Amino acid sequence: METESVTETDRCHAKAAGGIYAPGCPGRLVLDRIGDRWTVLIVGVLEHGTKRFSEVRDAVGGITPKVLTQTLRALERDGLVVRKVHAEVPPRVEYTLTEFGRSLIGPINGIRAWAEENMDELFALRARYDEAKTSDQ
Image (tube, rainbow, N blue to C red; front, top):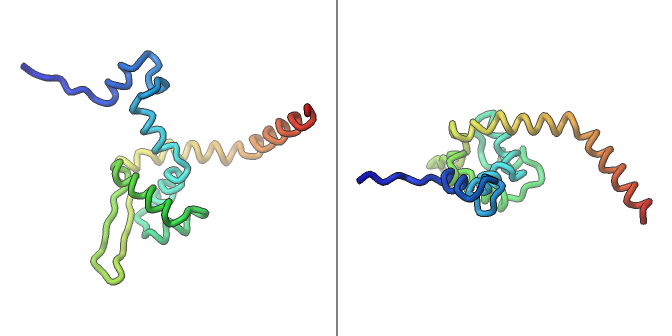
């Protein structure tokens, strides 16, 4: 008797007609990973090739070494990044997007482009909203 393999996608669709919007859908974990601001910035840096830890840190302004390490480990665990340690003194560690990780470049570049094209309008709308809220009080 053949047993069918149940995938996370199957479980997500089985949760409800809401799919990824349903509480408990494993797809939300994927959205958490790819929607994380550090992930977006790190993938953008690694899009241009292999980088050392310090190069990624310097390119992604404002990230602490601890958070960078945690994010790179999570990306490696998820199969988006490969970490290579060179047997040198001191050790040289490099990070490269996997083919799977490279599949994020298009969507992330689309979001980045939208942000760059719309930031002035967004900030103007935000200021208008804040001004209206202040005058209501």
